[in-house]
Image (tube, rainbow, N blue to C red):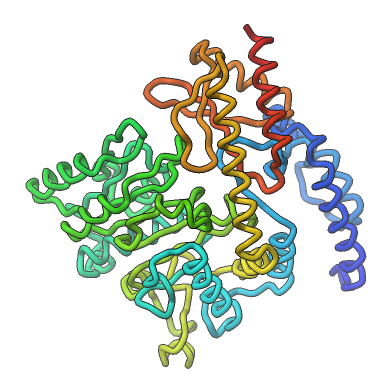
Length: 474
């Protein structure tokens, strides 16, 4: 008896599934962008027990269409303007399919040399494509690795920063005492979670106030560092952000970096969403000061058409990261590792096992080329600028500020409750999907324009719907 799907069956069903996915992208706009199901509605339609006997693949796909699809929020819809995008593209899907098909576990160079060496090469390519500091390249003092998310990247940076500050003693003793980390009031929550995971405690996480553009104030940062030093504490980590989640604010990386150098503090720069903009030379002004960063991360799975999960994380000095996270039990020892001739990426992050993520990023880079990527990213920014212009010209809506990239914050002039009602009503209709933030007790709508398939017609229709719904609700 053999219960496996045969290569022939896989070939037949796989071709059907590729067609199904292609059909989905052709028809994605017919679905409500935000799933309209109630809590528990999907679960009620699923049996309480797994099947005793195997079922036909066609039966499974019927349940996908009838049960699963109503519970999908369509992140790949061109009318998805919520949060920050989690993008995809056909080359990326194919790269991910190939990765799954090969089933590589790339924890060591020896477990699949191509998995490691392609990743190293792709990460070096991106340093040049995006104008990043040369010392982030593997051929220099630093190097890059693909993490799952920016949250994992910041945790790795926190751990490396701790060990460098404590002369690598904390891994032995577990003693975090006296360490202090710094973020702005607008920094992503992943830093707070990382601080909790490493056992530092949120009482040792300082939140620095921001300026009128919601960017971290370097003067207040330095004052807090000096106060902590005077109290006998050990400042060890600062996170600056290029493109905060709430407002896309850009922290002054260069000024922050100089302070970090002065007090021997690790500077991590998070550009999870907006880092892709560095593909455009005209936008590299926002990335000035990266040469002072000890680590840097951005997510191709947000705005570079590479499906989740794919975070690019670089360090200026790879020896610190490797020394922080390296453990070599007997069962992982091998000749290539012991000669020191290879990179073993298991030493570059928390987890041991790792997927062949670089394939999908490689496919994207080779399909689009730098020219294609720059074209589409520039189109998104231009659409954001057009939307900004419409808001400015409106006598009903107002703008928070001039958006640096592709996120526009705006609101109707009738107040917080009206704007919440406006957003909820639009999302319930399902034609577009928006989310919000609250800044200085004011409710702002967020228009994030970065979905792979979004074009001018989609943004124009979103603006029409906003105005139409606002009139209905008055």
